Length: 526
Image (cartoon, rainbow, N blue to C red):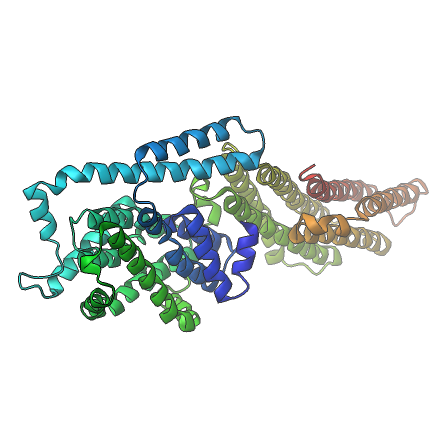
């Protein structure tokens, strides 16, 4: 899935193809668009990339209708048999990939079983006058055989409402194929129902975007507008196009199987034509969406507090958490940069307050990441995703500790200031050199974290020697301070030496925190 997402970010055609392929495999555009909302929220995808994938998802969702049209004679026994064998594979296979293949075909078998139930149980209704009369109320043609605007509107509304309730345009389209093959509705009615189904399927995306940040709502609006505008453009042409298709292909005289192909074809044709219409204007479309839903003027809640991790694909949820930990890494580097100004004696009350505020913010972030990943890890995760989740838990905890060390350093210098203690020039330079070593070490492990485990080995090749160098420098400064105090250096304040020794202990802990971050990345997957 990560490879598919990477492909989707290259260009609009790759994005559309990704959406079509993923949706064709899982046979649910709603699932794809919900995943896209999660990716946009976590920052994995931009809005423009998400729009491309959503457009492709509308094409991929037509696969189910084609399956029903191509295999009309498949019965419940086949579906249950396929599901049963697949369930055995899932339960008893030792290899993880075989388990996933078992789940895929288990779902496919249940789709065939469910559609056969629909088809079989619809047959008694076909002989019922009341049911026939109810269906005729949604006919697109009037009593004189002409297309009725009101009839078309009713069909579009029925298709939209039914799909919104079921939350799957694939399922409602498959039901429309069953109805038309059993002559319960006309082809024209089934084709118009398809228009409404494309609108109704966008409801699921909005459900996923409730309470989510701005970009997630933009992705949901893009899905809705894309389908709605397509329906508004094409619906007026249906009274012209459908009769031409009838005369050309002889749809009205087709056998039931042929009608199934025709409905599947109109579903695919609608989404392909809609895609071609939007393809040249996706950038402008993204700008329109951003204009309709502008950036929030107030600070939005952290992303992890408003998303249910169980509603996201595991890899998307873990990537979301990784983005938050990456934010923690940037904040910690900024903290160390700010404290260097304190060492130099150029700090301000505002800067010091920002350091304490950032430490509190990172405490909250670490708690949110731990809670979020804790929920994810209660589910059945692939081994690589579980390893990454465990690594993120460790790294988030260590970054929170780094922020604690920065705040502890500041507290020691405030203590010195209140007691009118002053560092000698030599002592200040010693601490500055040590601070720069720790800052560079933190930057190295943070860059390795942001680059990912494939680059971590190279970036962290000198991690242990660097850590040993910091430890040696701490010992040198401690020894120098103790020597100067034992030599009764009049420029040395014994109480100040005690504070410096405390500061050295904090830097030692800071080094250990950064070392633990690097080791967590190198240990991932071992």
